[in-house]
Image (tube, rainbow over all chains, first blue to last red; front, top):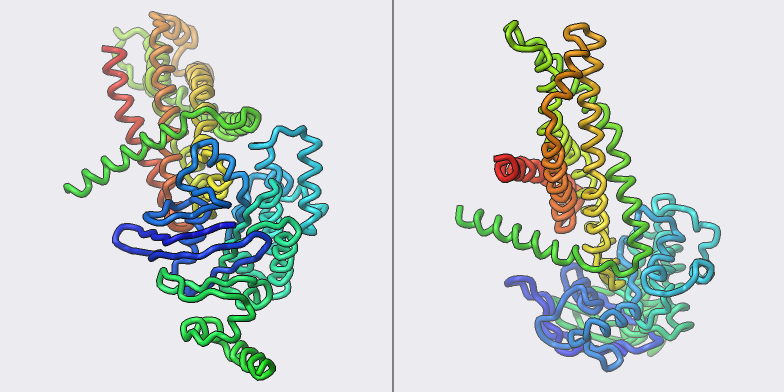
Length: 255
Length: 251
């Protein structure tokens, strides 16, 4: 479980996160939503240790990440998988080399064992027969799947995804959502996703945290988000006519 | 003015902090070795062609220019070979070849690391728990520092050979005089001096562009600007280092 307590983070005079408290449970997919500039990316980057909090704590199964020794921090890093918005695959490496990279760096395994593991995770993300391709030769959806494969190759306890659906067509976006959900259930990973995609909110948001101007304005599940009367959430999530109609239909149905 | 001074000091401080992270023990020897050989190929072997080409022709031009400017019959003709040898060993090979390499290799280093920064590849390394500066920059530093002395020695040989070929093909001066001049008063320390300079320049060629690439902020335009800036700063630092090294080693 990841527990965030009173998290503050700023850059110079600009305060981006203003005291966020929340938690993310294992085996569940949690989504962070909010308008651009609401602090989602800074929040996610604070969770994965790329930003150091000014105040507050983030603990991973009871271990506070700012109090790690060097060895503990190295161990914790290996428990984290991250899927970046633009996939962040290494351009100069093939798909196989990209996925194998964390294993080469941290596991004392033979080449055969590493290759076996790489092929296993590539099969898991439905990307067989692409081992020798370079990232530039792949579509956006395939790149995302390679990024997911690289993120899970070390069997992480915590999986973080920054806008995993951005730039993808609706069908591919749903495939990526399903894949993340399946992997979360299968390996009981604590998954935290930053997203703007309302389809993802409806489909896989077992827990949703809504950020507004650096504070947590609302949290709940994808069922609760239909019923909420929080004006900020309603205005953000149901900004399109289609979602307004979906919400009305849901509310009428459940009356 | 005051702000500029603080800005420069902040860059110098950041550069040395970067070096502190670069010079750490690599996390995995095997991965480091692979990266080192890749960098030797990318930064060294792939630069050989341009250096060989330029050295050969510049050596020829130095010899021809010297010959064409000696009109006084009392000046011995072997001076052409002597002057070409000294010019090539002392300045052309170590300094001008390093400036050429700063342009070619420096822009490559900044744009490749800068692109990794703006596409979050460096963040990906950090999240995995990898010291990204050590992983990306140390192989480049070692590749240039170990390989460039060989490149420069080759440039010396080809520059002097180019002068000889110029004499033979143009008939402006006798190649026998030229060879006599080349062999005259050979001081091995001058080659040592050139190699010491090359080591310092190679270090600058690897680290200054890496600094510009690693700390780039923005998108593709920022990467382009950083590449240009890195080449300019590397050349400036090479010229300054050249002055002080010459003063320290030859006076």
